Amino acid sequence: MSIKNIRLEVMQTIEKEIDSYMEKYLIPPEKIWQPTDFLPNSQKDTFFEETHKIREEAKELGYDFWVVLVGDTITEEALPTYESWLMDVEGIDQQGNNGWSRWIRHWTGEENRHGDVLNKYLYLSGRVNMREVEITTQHLINDGFDIGTANDPYRNFVYTSFQELATNISHKRVGQLAKKKGNVLLGKMCNVIAGDEMRHHLAYREFVKTILKYDPSEMMLAFEDMMRKKIVMPAQFVRESGEAVGTAFENFSNAAQRLGVYTTHDYVDIMKKLISYWEIDKLTNLTATAEKARDYLMRLPDRMLRIAERVAIPKDSTKFKWVEANGML
Image (cartoon, rainbow, N blue to C red; front, top):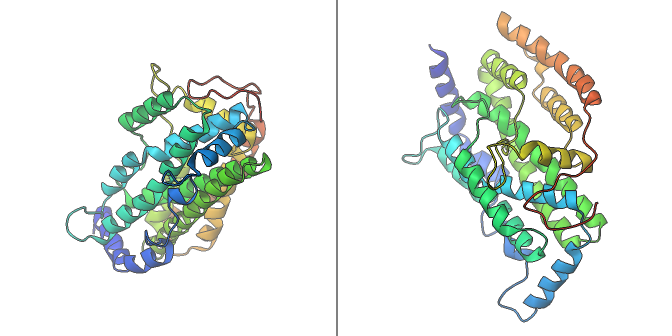
């Protein structure tokens, strides 16, 4: 049987249990938080008072903070790219009542709330140039992304396992920084978003663990391949108005590193967690090629850590068209 057919068979096997995954890791719309739970209610007389409070609290947050928050928001709002990419994965069929396509749609429904609540907060804060933010968001959706997975489910689930945890870390730490500056509302918003990302991470992580039971060698090779390529961020092609594709990403990433929101050390830590949870060191009945892949994966975190120790991040903030705030955090 071909590798493609084996992958399809594994996907169909897991699909039979997709309802249990959805029940465990996703929450119905009526029960989960919605953006309006955290934002001023425009139907109430207190709307302007609450909006003024948001604007006053926002003044305490510095330049790099706003760069990161805007970058995170833009990343979340490029959701159409991520959904369309996953819908093209082998074994996921948009037609009929395919279990995997239902998973993707429900996952997308949860993720959609993240960009929604953050975008509205940015608008109300008065600290960013919303037109520039909107232009960048449209550019990012137009430009798409290339995460090196093609339509292979194994590689895609490695990517989502990694990326969802990275996003959890980023939102959680942004929330912590906001709370330290007295911005309790923004802290809560980022914290609940981080909670969603963690649930999603746990689900995708479980998909990979299940695949390892059915097709350990091929899953091992897919994991190795993604680690050799390195996990690229969804906003890799982010740019400002009038600029070339991807020109804003490095400066956005540097701001996140300066604040300690997401660093190269976090990248290595996520890798270690996945290797541990998937019990890469304990898998048996691997092909010779997969054994070599395992050896590479087991040595990789230490190698990456040595590289991370040598990474130098620019100390000065880079000016963005998005951000109108002044000062440093």
